[in-house]
Image (cartoon, rainbow, N blue to C red):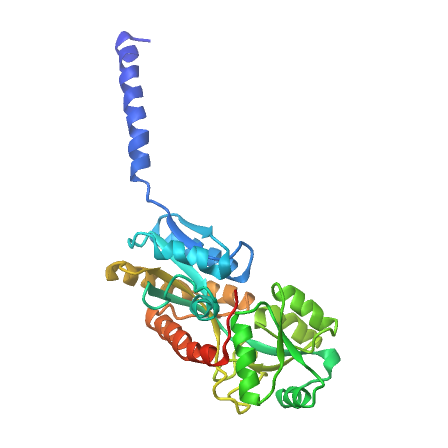
Amino acid sequence: MPTIARRALPALALLAAGAAPAARAQAPRPLSLVVPFPAGGDTDVTARFLAERLALRLNRPVMVDNRSGASGTIGTLHVARAAPDGDTLLFAPSTFATAPLVLRRGAGYHPVDDFVPVALTTTTPLILLASRASGIRSLSEARAAAQAGRIANYGTPGSGSPMHILGQMFNRAAGIELAEVAYRGVAPLINDMLAGVIALGFATPAVAAAHIRAGTLVPLAVSERERSPLAPDVPSFVELGFPGLVLPSWSGVFAPRGTPAAVTEMLSGHFATILRQADVRSRMADLVVVPGSGDPAALAAIVADQFGRIGTIVRELGIQVE
């Protein structure tokens, strides 16, 4: 090898060594999308799917960070305390708005004052179901059975959940006194309903759809103002004469208070575009949820309604859990 070439090698090596740190320094920082519940649940599955799409649009990594515990408050507080720079976002279900209402010791955050809404990502109704063994086939039959003392309770995936609140709202509106039976999640509730252990229970269409198709669970009413495209044959509580029983489930993205408007508007635009894509909507259909609009104003409105209107109901009914 010529001498000049041998002398050039150290210089080239130094250049290469210097280039690697420079390339690393230019790599975009990951965006953290915090899910305040364990991996594998409905909220987590949706968050991961949308995180992949957001990463493509931002051309930067989007990492889902599961910070579960304390009814979702651990992860939610982590985001509330994060730097308001758009690098840490919260992906939350509707318990985000209701947890501060029902937790006896408080949640430590205010869903309206401590966060900036970024995008409404999904909506879905809550659905009141009857077991096939109960013989109940309509909401009026469920009410009559409760009034006659033939049934005494209803099941939920957990005390303090939106399902618990909706059950107490139904009690008051229907003039009945069914007791809540709180399960540790929706799976054991559905199993007991299939076995005929409990006659009534609240769930979401995603959980109940296969059982409804099989005829092993009977849908009685959904918790939106009108019938849901997820269950078009099931009347709403409003349609059946209970105008106050509106409590949809949803998911949305939030940023810490103080995040610049330019940042949240940019993110909102990306989510709105993602949620309009045909394959994304198809994936949402597979998950048995309705794609949201991505509109931050729509998310702000639904949070304000649930924290305000439902908060009044929770206080009137005295719903509190540890």
